[in-house]
Each structure stands twice: as C-alpha cells, then as structure tokens.
Amino acid sequence: MQEIILIKYGEIILKGLNRHIFEDKLVRNIRTAVGTDARVYKSRATIYAEPAEGADVDVLMQKILKVFGIVYAVRAAVCEKDMETIGKTVLSYLNVAGRKTFKVETKRADKTFSLKSPEVSAEIGGMILDAYPHLKVDVRNPEITVNVEIREAGAYVYAEKQKGQGGMPTGSAGKVMLLLSGGIDSPVAGYMMGKRGTCMDAVHFFSPPFTSEKAKEKVLDLARILAQYTGGMRVHIVPFTEQQLQMKAKCPAEHLTILMRRMMMQIACHIAADTGAGAVVTGESLGQVASQTLEAIGVTDACATMPCFRPLIGMDKEDIISIARRIGSFETSILPYEDCCTIFVPKHPTTKPRLEKILESEALIDTEGLIQKALEETIHVDV
Image 1: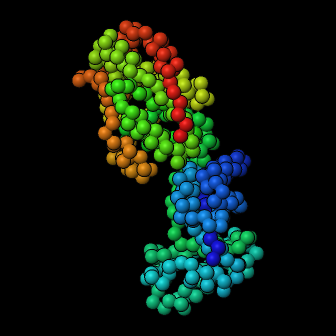
Image 2 (image 1 turned 135 degrees about the vertical axis):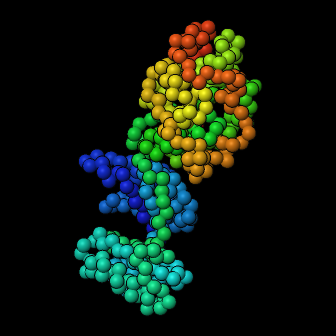
Image 3 (image 1 turned 60 degrees about the vertical axis):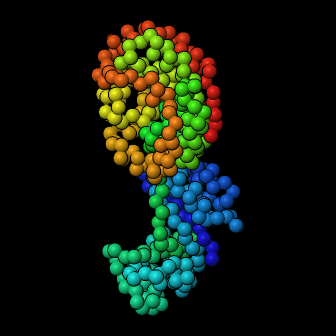
C-alpha cells in the first residue's frame, strides 16, 4: 500500500499576496530536512512528501515535524477515488477494529467527485459498522477519527494527526544572533525566535581555565539540538577570561555582573553586524536573577547598537523548562559544567543599577581595547 505524508500549515494562510513566498520557503526547508528520502511538492494549501523507495517513514515524520511553519503532519494511505476502494483502504490501513467508538470526517477538495463530504462520511461509516458491528459512532469524543480527503490526484486516508512546531518558516524573518550560554534558558530563547521565522548564529563566551572544554562542548551540543529546528548555524566562541579578570581587579564587585553583561552585549552586537544579523537574542526572564531586573536590563540595553529580543521575558521557570524538555535541550543544559556567567559572581550584586554609576566603573578598564581583543580572538564553529 502506498503511503504519503500530508503536511498542513496555518499562519502562512494569512499572508495574502505574499503567501506563495512563505509557502515556497517552507517547501524548500522541508526538502532540506528530508534530503533524498522524499519528493516534496505543494498543492492547494497542502504539502506532500512522497517517501522514496526504502525510506523509513517514521524517521521522515520526525524530521518533518521539526520544521518550523508546520501545524501538523499525517501518514496517509493513497488510493483510487471510488467508494469501494476508499472503504477497503480504511479497513486495512487504520486500526479501527481495536476501538469502541469512531467518527468519519471527509474533505472533498475535488468538487467533481460525485458524493458530497457528508455523504462520503456516512457511506464510509456504514462500511465500518458492517465490518465491526461492536463499534459505535461518537461524533463528540471518538476513540478514533477516520479522515478521508478526496483531491484531484487521489484519495487519502488517515487517522492520527501529529502536531508540528507551528510558527513561520526558518529564514522568512531575517537573521538574529543568539547569546548562547550552557543554561536552560538561552536554547529555549533561540527556539522561540526560530519559531518566528528567523535563522540564527550564536555567540558563546568562554573563560579558560575557569570554564572547561567540556563546558564548551556542552554548548556546541546545545547548538546542534537547536540546529535540528533552525537549520545549520555558526557558533562564535569568544574568549572572555582577560576581560573578566580585569573587571574583577579594577571595578566594584557589586557592578561585575552588569559590566560583564554590557561587554557581552557590545561584542555580540559587533559580531551580529559583521554577519548580517539584525538583532541579538538573550534568554533573560524578568526578575529571575540580579542581572534581569528592569533596571539592570535597561542599563545593559543602553550599550546595544541594535534591537535585543528577549522572548522569555514574561515566562516563569517551569514554562521554560517545559519547552526545554519538549525540544530536547533540557538534559544537556543541566550537565554540571560551569559557564563564564557563573564565575566571579559577587555575593551582593546590585539589582537596581544606575547607568551613570556603571559608566564610572566601566571607565576604570579599557573597554574598547578588551572588546577588540575578544573579537580578534573569536573562533567560529559550524554545526
């Protein structure tokens, strides 16, 4: 029996005259995800993925469901557009016999088909009841919904819809630069921005010998997890040891966290501008730690040369952890390898910094020289 994957999208439908641009982008992204394992094409607000001979359809589904822009996808059986064949396909392809209740839903995209959608549903329902008299119809809460779609190319039969990531196709909303630490929050922030159609690179700050090679590999692993959704990305690894040591030696301890965040922001903006990104992204959530108060965020943003997006700003930790578990980053994020944000943390960091006081502390170090040194020593890793 021939199988096909039917792919449905949602928000793209609202794009009016530009809709075809987003649809074509989504098709290209799906083709990139599946490679030569399927033929992907579009027709009438549905994208089709025909598995190549010998392709593992389960693996194809998992790849497709990670592509942003897809609301849901289904594995469907393909058959001829006559009622007897459709009924036989339903009975042989779907696990109807093991259920107690069912309903049939029909979509008739091909208006030349002789029966209307309710008539198809009623006739297929009758065939199911004839084959399995113990079953009952339940239109409100059935154990299985039998879906029949009748289109120009044929009829398609399926039951389970698997939820996709939703959002917009990667690359349809420009490029951003993610500040990627080894924690739980920043990978989720990257995922959330990817869901809005951005492609991205990442910046990671690395402070040997205070942070280990395992900490750096952990971050690259997080980038690889993100790349399953956003496509490939380049990670810009910035050495940050000398910068932190100078701040610790010359600046008030209570200002260290804010000073570090401001320098990270400036470096990230430089790299973003050089690589064509139009904004930087952080995993900050309002009030979560001392550097994420309203005042601290304002002082940090004062040095930014482009917009800074914080998609997690209104989320609590449980919400963030829930998404991290779902996208597969949580178990990597909690590995016990310190990043540079957790070293040299003052006992009593300021939570309501004033910009003029922070600028006075910043004047005690060669900020421009330290930024330039970090940029010159940055290494780049493609994942």
